Image 1: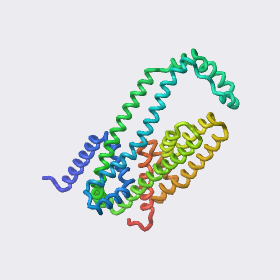
Image 2: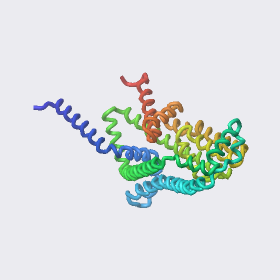
Image 3: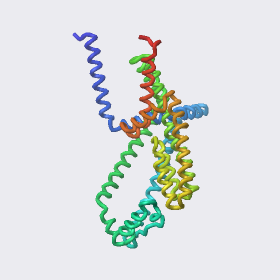
Image 4: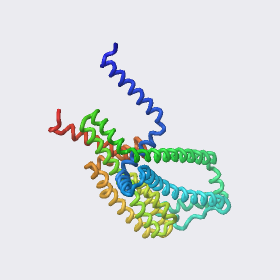
Length: 351
């Protein structure tokens, strides 16, 4: 005859086995589920206002989750679509431009010879390998065409996988919007049962950290991309929209925006000379400095009273360990650890 203790052990073993089996079954969709949770946390205030407005007008309970999901989907898809169109145009231009090099060569620009110290050497190599049509054709023929084909196939596969993740993310996001309030109550009850009242506080810290990180990374990155995109346009750089979009994407990673800014400054150096390039780089550096050292720390760290050092370590460590997801999960984990540390070191905490 089984005792209550043995029944409890069997219950825990069966529960752990079912949990492990469920994770194994859903493993390919874990990324989509996590992205949906991050988006739901970040956009929950927007969804609450939308639901309240539709409720006051007597709308169906399913309308608000559907509209909110469609809005988030469009905010994700429209920028990606515009970038894909711009990249497609550039690839088409490149495909048409390469054969002309085989026929006429590629003359060295005048500014190459004016580069300090190495200009003469680069100009000589350019004349010998690119300006002469036969040498240019020979150099281009060394490209491994099979490698290019394989790279294109890999890129297509990755795009298909990312599209699948996005679809399941938006589908999950809809159900999180619809059932989010009930799910939060269930999680709070589980946390109270497992770890006591402190579990709710740690959970709130993680939620605020995720929301602050999204605001600090995404919104600030979009702001940097918009300001520098306008600067690229005023400087008359080619494809300022594409450069601005790339700046916004790279600005979501700490110290990433200066990479695209440097590329833009180099393009302007070639196109218009030293002074415009210096002005563009100085303006961009000022925008990045203010965003990264003043605006972003306030939005991310201020949400959970987390120092910028832990925010930075969480972002970079999360990016290294978990990829793009780590950008948002890293600060949340750091916030939870800081909350636990504050509780453990509190002399007035219960023994």
